[in-house]
Amino acid sequence: MLEARNVTKIYETRGVETVALRSVSLSVGEGEFTSLAGPSGSGKTTLLNLLGALDVPTAGSVWLDGQELSALDGAALADLRLAKLGFVFQAFNLIPVLSARENVEFVMELQGVARAERRARAHQVLEQVGLADLAEKRPLEMSGGQQQRVAVARAIVSRPRVVLADEPTANLDSRTAAQLLDVMGRMNRERGVTFLFSTHDPMVIERATRVVRLHDGEIVADDATP
Image (cartoon, rainbow, N blue to C red; front, side):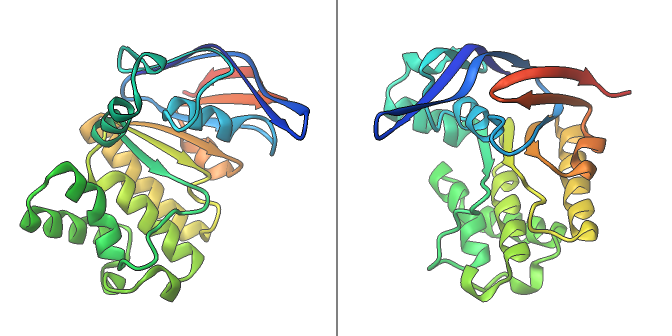
């Protein structure tokens, strides 16, 4: 479903180069529930962004569902992300002028889902993440943890093939984090949605069926859990 082949990513700031990833190769199969683990600066977020077609590698290639991303133009990449990917960002990236419900509906609106179905699906997923009573609140009227749950709801409501989640439990208490992981686990088991997380959270790592560990831009371990 997702593949990085000998991917290197170098950032340059004021003439200083920083190597974020060094010749990383990773293949994630359909239906996996995989965690990218490692300390800050290990390359987890960079790898997620490359696999999600949000950035391009300095060297190497990235593939999604059999398509090489570098072969697609901007419009084709946008269509691919819309049709197949769901994102959970560390910064939430909610639209501040929209309510929680409207944020959750937004991707479905872009996909052309009918209004009645958008409303029904948004209500259902907000209920699943425990935010049905805050559906009409805007992001600034919610706590960081509540915004995080809206971001997760938005990522999964469009029924993507793959969900890429950057520290999805970072702003949540343990009980809420467990509830969200339950929701995502059900989607993985019942609908075959592929999940790839970057995380420091032991709870996420424990629930993953595969843990890929990065350090200084390289994969240092890749273990399937029993």
